[in-house]
Image 1 (cartoon, each protein chain N blue to C red):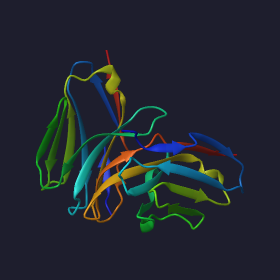
Image 2 (image 1 turned 90 degrees about the horizontal axis):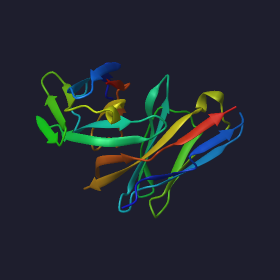
Image 3 (image 1 turned 90 degrees about the vertical axis):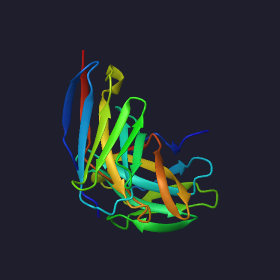
Image 4 (image 1 turned 180 degrees about the horizontal axis):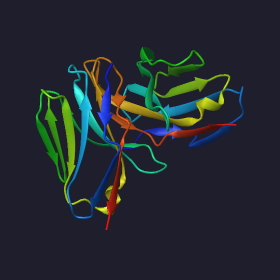
Length: 111
Length: 115
């Protein structure tokens, strides 16, 4: 199965950009996802990227995929206090019917 | 369009009891997956159902079971509850194209506490 690793903590100043990194082991992953979890809540799908793409941009979010290094990153532009949360990257093969999650990166936005 | 609905939101059970959790997927989604989230183990895959058939199962004991109904709603059951079963149980529904899952949307979860 997939092993997914993330750094555990990130502190960023309000208005700066945040970059959350993730590495994965399974090169046959079809989809790679970023989810956001706020305290006491479920997982909110932020964005996803197909494994045949290098980059995807969606408003303040930019996902970069380096297939050679099996590295995925999420950049949040103009980080706001409402962006404070735990961010999970996840990978899966579409015919495997399951996602493998990283441990989550806790992002703290300071004024 | 309504999201993924999980009921109940919170549950307290005693060791040895059994519990049933429910998940209603997004309308039109036929795939439902279940995950367990704990501080120690993170998010772990339990099982996935599509058209009432279990297509994949995670590494959990047989006390954990599930099923899916013809309207795509799913239930999971945990029998003989243990303290270690205390967790947030998350359900996800997915679009399916050609039998393959794409985006997975999660519900708010059911917080199960075993005392």
